Amino acid sequence: MSKIQAIRGMRTILPEEAPVWQWLESKVRSITWRYGYQEIRLPILEPVSLFERAIGESTDIVSKEMYNFLDKSGEHITLRPEGTSGCVRTIIENNMCYNNTQRLWYLGPMFRYERPQKGRLRQFTQFGVETFGMPGADIDAELIYMANDIFKALKVERYVRLEINSLGTLSERHEHRHQLVSYFEQHRNLLDEDSLLRLQSNPLRILDSKNPDMQSMIEGAPKLLDYLGSESHQHFDELCRLLDSAGIRYTINPRLVRGLDYYTRTVFEWITDELGSQGTICGGGRYDGLVELFSHKTLPASGFAIGIERLLLLLETVGVKGNISNHPDVVVTCEDPGQNIDALLLADQLRRHLPEFKVLSDFTGARIKRQHSNALKTGCRYIVTLNADSRTGLWDLKANLQETMRPDDIWKKLANRSVKTTAD
Ligand code: ATP
Ligand code: MG
Image (tube, rainbow, N blue to C red; front, top):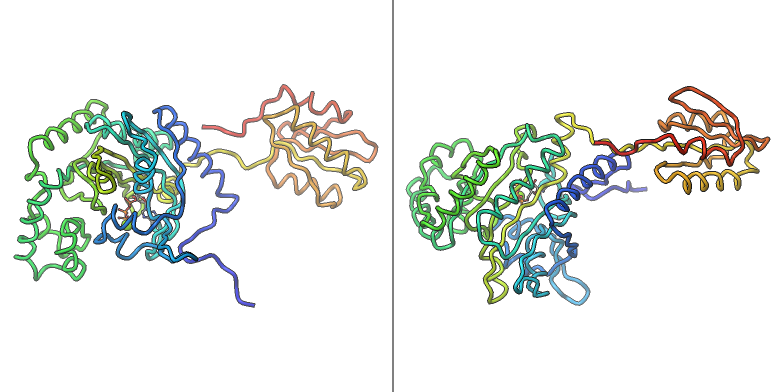
């Protein structure tokens, strides 16, 4: 028989991995809540045209990474490669920004046909935040404060650093692009194959090439910051001031351009040095021109996305353990298989009276000794045994104390003992 396996680059999150995901997700949810952001749940399938227009055909995502297919009625559909475009579609479709601002967040799978490697998957998870209707550096700063709070809550703030840059407006970028192309033309002999392709389609991307042979040439390229007009400068200066006031450290990286066409002014990345070349954990910025591509309204917008798998890799690498426990608090065992109804009802009674407790029943039908050794392996705190004489044993594994009592007394005995399934 041929072996059945998951699709390359698409991982199953195994039960033993789920607690750290749940811990991370609960931290992220609580931070979005405290900042007053609302959750949006976007479809996983979107029309191909949405991304072609929003992200741009010259980007890696649209030109080679999308999972496109025709559905049964011949529509061009794709698995979403990112969440920003879907948010923009939603707010336009539902007229959500009429006299209003929006602060939204989402968490879910994204799909890109890339070469799978550590920190790079074909299905990966993004936590993303998008805001609409606010043009100032203050909301950009708020986004950065929020990302910073997430890294703090997960105890990895020491391992990430923030880089920022400004891409100016589309027209400022236009002028810079012109100069950039002619600079690269002059150094054409130093450009690698990838960069030659980008020279016409997306020359800005050449700036973030990792090719060591091109680094010193790139260092000398015209810098976008020198082409900003006074409003863009002010916006950037204010952002720096707002970060300084909050004590958030950053470096200005004039070569930070981000992969997508739609950014304007603020761009930022949080990077770690712990994960090798897949070190960008979070990327974001302002995209004031995007809404206009789909409607006749202009609407300022700004957001970021965190790659959850990379963040989890970082937690693992630096030894941070989320502690939502996977252990049951109580395992109910039963000596006589004929009493399994009583055992089931006993477990039910415990759950009703002890809502904080995680209660697991042994349904293996094995001998009681085997049931106990199985229970011990789960790491539980208590083993309850329904004995053949209809008394129940309560075994407190931590105190190593065994008592016998009536079944109805078990929950009373446990009621004033707290269990801690979640912790910081
Ligand atoms: P990269 O340069 O690493 O390809 P990107 O610029 O394509 O990243 P974005 O589109 O900005 O990434 O997505 C935001 C974040 O999502 C990234 O910083 C990263 O943490 C994560 N991410 C992007 N692509 C992948 C992937 N294929 N697998 C895992 N995480 C990813
Ligand atoms: Mg990419």
